Image (tube, rainbow, N blue to C red; front, side, top):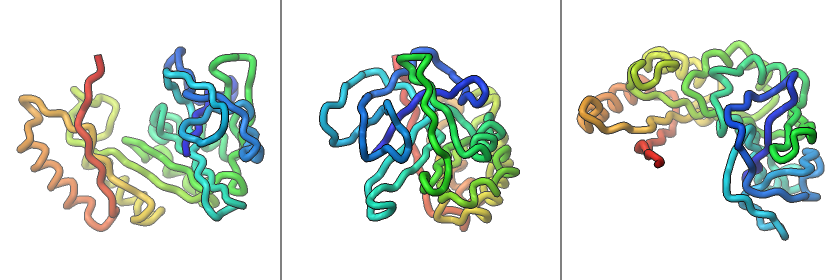
Length: 232
């Protein structure tokens, strides 16, 4: 299941992009005491008396799943729900991993900060979703004690649509390098969002998807696609 929490203190802040972010649920859960999630924001748990909130904002997302591991608890730290940490805040994450902790500010109460442990004895796997994993590569040694899964988005758009994203050929090169480090089953390709317009036609996407797939052959077993959805 998924746990949403807020931002961090000034010294190790996960950058705050929106001021109005709030979690979906707040509750206390004795099963998560090893994470010191108190209070925590939780979505999708069958636990009594959650308090619903309908606006969703995320600084950091911790997916908590139940399995046979760690007395029935597996903890997945998903870094990709709010911003692109590998692309823009790799050094910040490296510092938090070295420290073995991250502090999270309660979006309802700015004076309330909770400390979370970022150590292999607590976190089983760290998940990434990025359009540029290159800045994280120098810090891969810090991730060795953790399980990893990477989603890397590679799309054929130019700087007019994605001005801060490397050319897709460069991202493919980094993808292949990352796949060699973590393994083909620990990395997936995202070809999304798919934008359909006069320039980016269906024929264009078919051609570019085939070209990228050929370039990524043997580096992953997963590809995810989706179409752009515009919200009013």
